[in-house]
Length: 345
Image 1 (cartoon, one colour):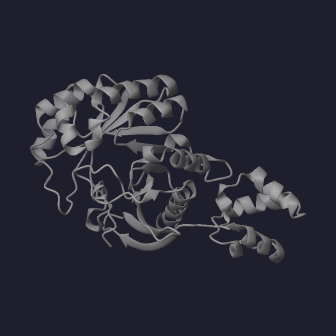
Image 2 (cartoon, one colour; image 1 turned 120 degrees about the horizontal axis):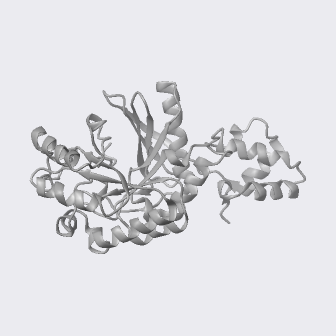
Image 3 (spheres, one colour; image 1 turned 90 degrees about the horizontal axis):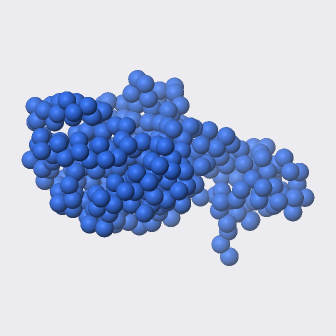
């Protein structure tokens, strides 16, 4: 019979197990600390757990941590890590450092099924969802990297790595619950952003669940015709349905949304495109539009616009009182920038 992953147990369930083993109740809290705060990767790591109890734990349970498989360092300080799952799949996560912030960009799936036309991960098949503890491990290990390289803990987490987070709804929400728990990493949910390509039904569910973290919509085109061309998911989740879902989300949570918009040369970079974006911005309670530099990806035809075109686009948004900023790429030299994660290594 297969053993149960011990990290799927609650503290009270572990306490009950320890009572059955005729162990004092406080042992459960010690074990829980090893699992979620000290980030033990095996029962052998748990120095204050006795040999006999370790024997029973190993006999009854398994621990399935992510393993760090490879690391790359960018000239700009960005660190990309490749992680291996217990069943041999590879995923990637990124540490993005600035003076003010240390941000972890984490994955939610092995591969992706959405096939967006500008994203390297979209060329991969989706193998499976990551479990909540695998997502947690990414954050814990990237936090360790941040402490080691920059002597500072993570300040922010973005679910903008491999996969569509809202297609792993339960796993992502459970991982955030553990990341924000006092007996977990104790991070503020306001420091966490979940980015979606636009799954209207799940956006409404986020509202109904009254989540505390931030939500970003990967928009990239402000009309259905263009969005259909580059994001097949728009055919079943068009802009009208997304506006309705985002307004429901805001009504339930009071959280404004961020729009992500990559500029592609001769596709969505004209003043007409900017005007359509302004009109869409005014239909949804939005706190910010991130205008993103396109990052070159092998096998894709898109290129980024010239600087003066980008400047005109940004100026039009500013003139129309849109809160926007241009997000420069980080980690391009190691394929760690937005849209580049694809396990090329």
